[in-house]
Length: 336
Image 1 (cartoon, rainbow, N blue to C red):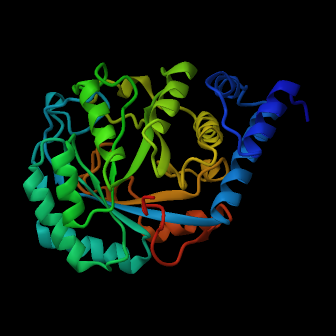
Image 2: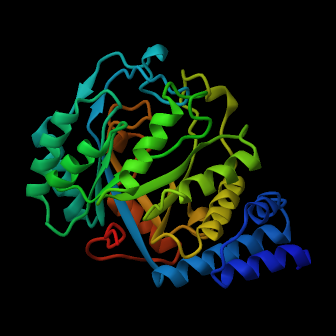
């Protein structure tokens, strides 16, 4: 196997749980995906994750509550009002959300996320969250995936029974999205400084994004001290402006995930991948998502009939990657 001495040194440093520099991460990102070094990188990330989680994999289940045209018009998102893709707006009732949450728990999910578009009424989201909290086990972590919010809203989420919030500074925020980047940063700071654990991600990554952009977002995200870190590639949703740019290859996806795992080192409690990919589960990820309801990456009204996985299929993917699916509830969201 031919591995440059410099790459070997960086991989050894990461495996010793030492923090990598931006330049070291860039060197790893520039590895040829068809080279011996690529498989050494994947192996290092895979070894690090399996040591960190004791070879236990987790399934995070998400319920998309509404399918509405959204005025933020993110260029990769099915919900964008300007793209005119949503012909009949849809919203799950409280009872429907509660039912799906209970079904996810029964199927073996380890955490439940509730997701809405950015223009969903916050008060209504809290009401749904409270009902879901009452219906599921008190030990089941509940996570909010909503638009931007401040400290007062963070406290209300905590009081409603949420343990964490998913939030990200997207690739080319403010250029490919209709959201002020400074507002995104303020929400991330709010979560970091609250009792909510932060679940964050490098997303959505497309073929046009440079190594420098991807690495910069890795380090930006780590600055907000996430409990869980993820990498998500962009799905080319037909009818959205960025669809024509296509999708990164599975090997590129695996490389980005592996570099992110090594950059995170000992600073995160779990490392996830989105969408589902067996090769990425062998490149540093130990968690995978199951989904129901609306999905910004899917034209189906209910993603469980489209690209969304069931909990059962997600758990089987973990087994195929030689992880043991967690029985019970995730501890990733215990903020310390």
